[in-house]
Structures are given as C-alpha cells and as structure tokens.
Image (tube, rainbow, N blue to C red; front, side):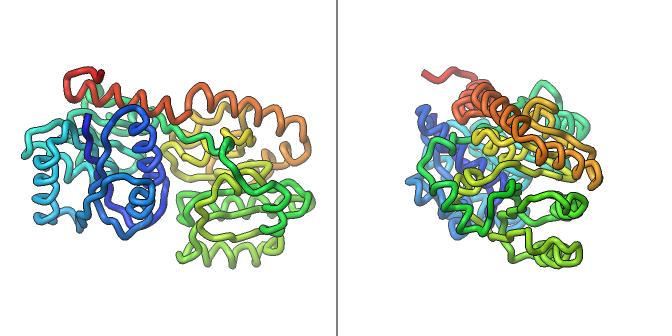
Length: 356
C-alpha cells in the first residue's frame, strides 16, 4: 500500500512527532510512505533525515488552490492507494484532493477542540476515546470514527547519555527530578506546575522544562518562577530532540494540562518506567491508570497537584512501583507496533481490502 501523508507544520509538537513515529512504524510493516507539506520546518527536516520521500507543498491557509492542485497531481503521479491528513488543515486538503483524484482518504483528529473539515474523510482516526467522543458531538457519524491510540518507540532501549552525566549537564543534584516535555502554551499548564511546586518548596526537588523558549508563554513562566521564589530550582533547557536523555535522568513526569487529547510524553515517560502526575482531562486517563501508574488530579488545582507530587517525593517505593506498572502498560497498549497495526486496519477498511 502506498500512502501520502499531509500535515502543515513548521514547528515541533505532538502531532509532528506522532506523524514521524507513525510513518516509521508503518514503513516497517510494508507501507510505502510519502510526506507532502512544508519541508523547511522540524517535521520536514526530520522526515528527510530519516530517508522518507518528501514533496514540498506549502498549504498556505485554507484556500491555497495551487497547493490543492499539487497534491492532486502527486496522488495521481504516485498512484497512491490512500491519502492521510493530520489536523484540520491536513483533513481539509486531503478531503478535497482525494475526492477529486478518486482515492479514499483518512484524517486523524489530534485534539478535543478542533473538529472542522473532517467530513470528507472515508474514515476518521481519533487518537483517544476522548477525541472520538468530541467528534461525535461535532456531528460526525460514529461508524466512521476509529480510535487508534498513540504508540511510541521504545526510547528506553536506545543508547543515551549516562544518567549522572546528564543530570550534571542540566545542573540537577541528587534531589528527585521532575520533568515536563511540552511546548510552552497555556493548555500545557506550566503555570499550574510552578504554582504547585511552590507549595512544596520545603521538600527537595528540581524541575526540568524541555520546550522551545522563543514564545511569550516561556518568558512568562521564567518570570513566574522568579516571582514564586523557585527560579533556582527550575531548569529551562529549551527544545530538545534527545528526549531519551531527558527522561533517562528524571524521576517523575508532570503533565498538568488544561486540555489534552493523548500526550505522547505520557507514553514516552511510561516506556522509561517514570511515575506520572497529571490532570484528569481529555485522554490522559486512557494513558495513566490512576493510583497504579500515576496520580491524576483536577485541572486548575495547584494544591491538589502539590499533594500528589508530595506523595511521590516522599515515597521512593511508590515511585518505583508506579514506574514498573507504567512500563508494563506501555508494552501492552502503547508500543509503536500497536499503533501501526491499528492504523493499517483503518487503511484496509478505507480502501476495502486487506493488505498482504
């Protein structure tokens, strides 16, 4: 099966990492993968470095006729079996292009707040049950929606910098290290994390925040850490591609999100046997088994977050037990191969035949 993937992006984020990992997983299962989209951004550069065929198409806004024509020509030239769009813009262009080129198309919805332009998809993939429920409320027929949970590579099995070396590089001492791997945007709740940690300032901890610092939110968080009197215990390390090194030096993952479909960082952290403290929103409860692999708290509640963090800071055995359970859950439900198999099953439905 030959599939063309469409995602308009210039930055690194969850959807971009998802598509990179999905294409890698599908390729190992015999799917011929071609990417169409901007090549000058993080995703285009990563896919080219990984050896995938890539076609530069800008997809500027939602009324870029030139890009639509380019995609239609690419579909016909490659004799693609299927087109797979991601996010609303990808769904919009693949919906029209596939219809005009006469091939089926699949669209993946990555969030619980963006539900437009999926109507022309032969099948809609939701990355969590929470997203699937959201799509139904938007009016899409349930019989066209399939949930395929994210799956991530086993980063814990990759070579990485020794733990103590990495902690020294990040200026993390022997206190428990909490980590957030997330873009600095209001939905991720960095401010909730900082306010929660300020409430347990009497305990030993260091917070490592991995994410690009070129945003207003990042600057606001640096200022907030100073205002709360915890700036000396927070490490703003910028965007990192070596997430395996970051997880490998951590003790706890934080995800105090205000909105989340199904965060890749939750699954990556589970692969590293990290216990998780997160808010119970969106699809987070599908990734974190509350009380077993981590602790879930209400959103917008720094005191509740502080209480959960304190429970893990005070109990090494609890951290280790939850981390081991998280690793088992990752292996059973969220490995890369599980996502690849689930996606291929949707493709087979869309094209009306089974792959050999």
